[in-house]
Length: 272
Picture 1 (spheres, one colour):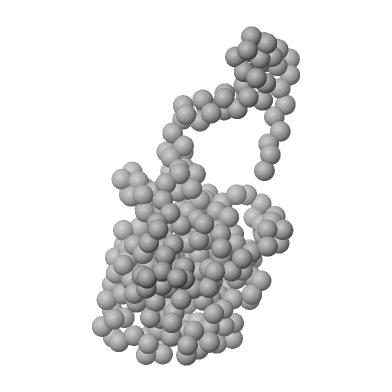
Picture 2: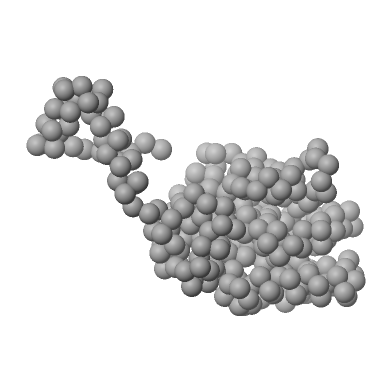
């Protein structure tokens, strides 16, 4: 994306003077340098924290603005006494089962993947997702933009094929950039999600699938798009419903996720 800046009058003459004396090769270079100096003079990470605290952007987008990984930004928020906004969608399990059986596609966004990672429940969800594919013929996917957004090499390996480490059985799906842009302009008038999160929303809408997200802002957007969304803990309930997990496995994973939620906003419920 290109931004056009109009400069005229005395300011333009002063910029031209800098070029004439050889300090810069062009006025464009001078403006770029001025912008770099401005950005170096402010703390972008702190600005991202303030915008996030106001509820205007997602956790992933705030961390992207701050140029930090989500776990690092997560810790930064806690250090400033700000609770990251992870939300557990309240869904009736029979309703979830009905939608799973009907839609047959589940799209995971970046917040759900990090919830699994931070709660150390990846192995449990690997078992759940494997069973969903083998027993229920449910496709579990992520957008290619989501893979690009991930900062931890461990996470990249967990959703990529051909690595020795155990992988989450997620299929990476490419998204058409033009279609994604149209979707974004239709539903997102303001920039509040990362491109990866928008791509997840787009795929869930296009494939009539289920979006798995724990981010409050992403859930807010699903209210505009009409996308059916659940949170990561709901998959545990789904697995318990079908006996995929033993009671001990279920309770251990549930406790780990609840512990993660309690460090954020508690195990809040988001109702449709």
